[in-house]
Amino acid sequence: MSTLDTAAARARGHQQAQAHSPENATLRGDQRRTALLGALDALLQDSTLEAINISEISRRAGVTRSAFYFYFENKAAAVAALMEQMYDDTAAAAAHLTGEGSPQERIEGTIRGLFASWDRHEHLCRATLEARASSPAVRELWDADRESFVPVVAAMIEAERAAGRAPGGVPATTLATVLLELNDRMLERVALGGPLAREDLVEGVVAVWLRTIYGRTS
Image (cartoon, rainbow, N blue to C red; front, side, top):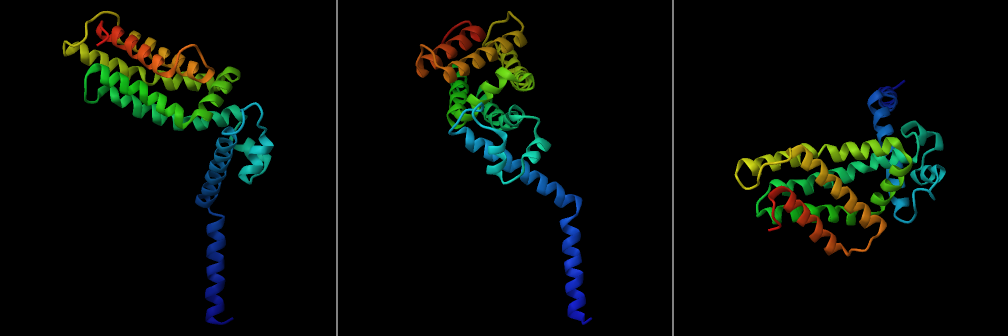
C-alpha cells in the first residue's frame, strides 16, 4: 500500500470513528429533537394540536415515528418543550417591572410585553392551552413557570414598600401570586375570546396591578 493509500485509509478510519463517537451521537440526537419541535411548531401555525398526528410531525421532521417517542411521551410533552420560547419572552416582559419609569409605565410595559409575546407565538399559546386542559404534566409545567415569577414580582413590591412608594399590608408573595394568576386569566381570554377588546384588557389589568400594589391607579 502506498503512503497516499495509507493516509487515505487512516483518514477514513478517523472519520468513521468521529461518526460513531458519543459527541456526534449526541449532536445527531439534538438535531432530531430540534427537527421534531420545528415540525410541530410549523404545523401548529395552520392546525390545532388535536388535528395533528405524530406520524405527520415525524414525516415533516424527516425522522421515524419511533424517534418521536424516543424524545417525547406524546404531543403534549412536545408542546411543553416548545413552551421554553414563551418563558423567555415572559422573562423579558417581567424585566420592565424593575426598569425605568413611573409605576404605571413599568407595569404597562410588562402587560404589553406579554401581549407582544402572544402575538409572536399565538399558535403556540393556543396549543399550550389545549395541551394544558388534557395533560397534567403540561399543566404542572405551566403553573411552575408562572410561579417562578412570584419571587420577582414580590421583590419588586417589597422594594416599592421599602422606598415608601407603596403601602404595606398583605404579604408581597400573596399579592404577586394573585397578580400573576390575573395575567394568566388575561391571556386565556385573549386566546378564547371575550367581551373586552385588547386595549380594554390592558387598561383594566394595569389598573388592578396599580391598585393592588400602590392603592391607586396612577
